[in-house]
Amino acid sequence: MPGTTPSDGAKPTRTPTPRRARAKKSPSTGDDLRLTGDRLVVQLPENGERKSASGLLIPATAAPAPKRLAWADVKLVGPDVRVAAQGDRVLFLPSSGLEVELDGQELVLLRERDVQAVSSAPASDARSQRAPGQYL
Image (cartoon, rainbow, N blue to C red; front, side):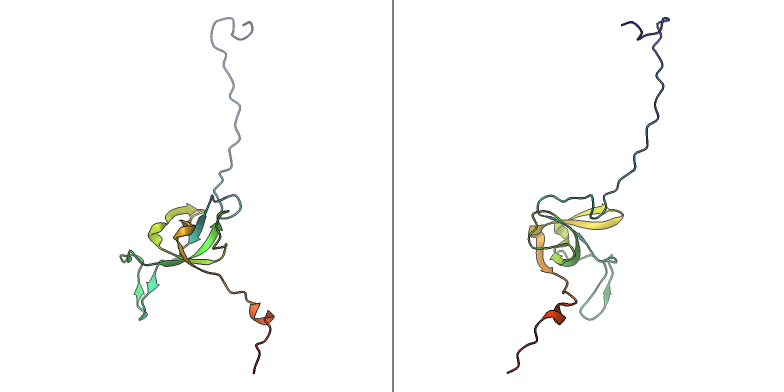
């Protein structure tokens, strides 16, 4: 093809065009991350320590009991989840979830069937809106 190669037979040099650096997106815990199916993302308490019934502090480095359930706050909810909503607390077996890191936070990915109980936060003004009880 005429005009595609120089007359001396050498390959034409192509000047590279500078590319724009892409902004690195890390998935935030809410806006641009969508869960599939019946998945939940929960956040365990920060320190991982717990107290015994007598008040002794059990460190997170101690070997956890394999059948001990844990409470966690729900951060993200998939479209098919029916029992929990964002902001609820759920009870689950920690060994049933998968650990995931989002925005530097250690979170746990669960299926809805792994949730044993749900505790939603009581509304602060619910007591003031209720009708008073009847006294006989």
